[in-house]
Image (cartoon, rainbow, N blue to C red; front, side, top):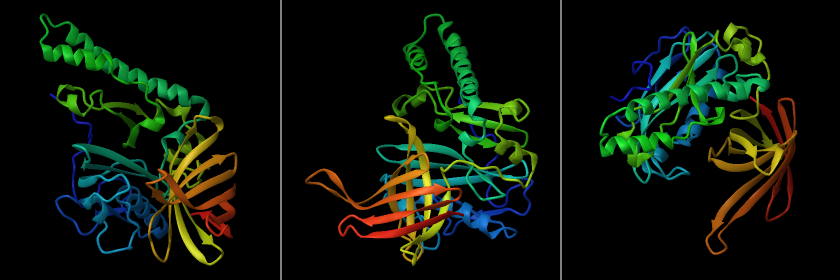
Length: 362
């Protein structure tokens, strides 16, 4: 019997958490394959806008209010990763005061269809996405990862013990044993999903089986939970403030943040930093991906960048040359971070002309 990893009853319509002023309805046009959350938070329109922008750009590759149908790219398989994505349901989870956690279920169809469940967590004081890496004091990140890995390994090893205890195991059981013995369990925070509940946090790790062997995987995804009290000594100052209900906001990392600003002092743009990850070639350099759009045209443009200290270097590609098998750059960006601001230059690859770039965190 496969266990469910969704620790909530899926609903449509309004949620039930403590944030009574945060309402969620369905993004239009709602269909059987497009049930997607739309946030309304009249007390703080900026937070409302930031959350909706993040969700729609990150999940649908759609800039809010850019064209009639937000689901056009995901429903036609024309996203940057060429998958058809269907969203079947969403739910608002009961959480502490300062947090909005949303669960979503759907299906992605690439080479084969694959169901998914995912969770998104937001700080209602700022509208920022909450990164798992920001939750814990840096000195304790490895400790937390170890506790999660220990929980996964116990679940898998306990089940392996049951399988190996069977007399005259069938071929199917032998295949299960092989699958679980080869299971990847050394997850880091960057490779996990998670969500806040009323008095605990749950981390979700991927299953042991690949798609072809999924029918054999009785454990499915791994869910490891801790009460907030259990993790109290590991929290970062940011999380202590977040969970206590305080209005004081501590500094968090660069990843998954929205910035607004201008190129050449006259072209308004918005930037969403997405993935941030360690560079294998340098311990003090981080690589990142971002999308930006001119507020007038609302067309997504991708950035691939590096962050070293407070300096940012970005390549903005124009198109892929099939003959040379290379991306042809459109522009290069060199900039520096100072507090919540980013200042630098945007250089046109063809003309070599420099334009100023000024951004500020929303």
